[in-house]
Length: 327
Image (tube, rainbow, N blue to C red; front, side, top):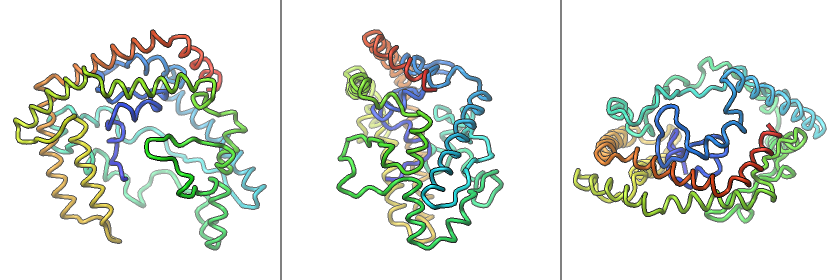
């Protein structure tokens, strides 16, 4: 399924459970500027959240340099040429917080949910000067089809057969031994994520269960029910939760992409859907404001996360210590 830009961060509370550990705020709400939810705040320092943007970028660049040099060593041992693939452009997000404002009527009137149209969409067209070129592109192109397949398998590991793919709702477990030279490089750097270890599995299971339970909590259901009633009164019935409205547009967009030809999805269909997206998002925005949706969800989220932190403080501190040691 094709997910539109940034919608993946707002689909469900449960989707954020793992990403939360990298400083992601639960999509239950959009905290006011400067606010972090208790769990996000707890982990942000362990993942470098206490570093300045410049320090974070330097750390990222050094991590990338080490990783790519190890990958090049590994690929040479596999019999391939490989130049360390180090993008020269800044890794900063192209869309900043000031440009992404889905609670502003002016913004929503232009972009809707930001699925089809969004700030910066046309700023990185193919062929523009992004400061990045894959140094291995010419070499890979010079290889035969079978050699290209072998190159990619050596680099990333074999493609999983369908029977080896996880079932619905099951997480994809990363195994460095089957992830090619990238996996080997991560292992050599000691960059194995402690959140995937057996030691911290009970805590991570508890985090996932927490978000699943929060998503279905009576407090949030009551907030969604008020929002849903407002939507129906405004001529947009059929949505039980606020995220259902966004998902409905995403599903229609996926269908257009799935039926696309070599030139891309039907342009008229995309234009019509963009108008529909804006119309729906505006009603959604009005109902969120009318029901004080964001603030009420944030209050519930923060209260429940704080209780979780209090109940699991020892385990969380142990995990954070391991994260800090490996950062």
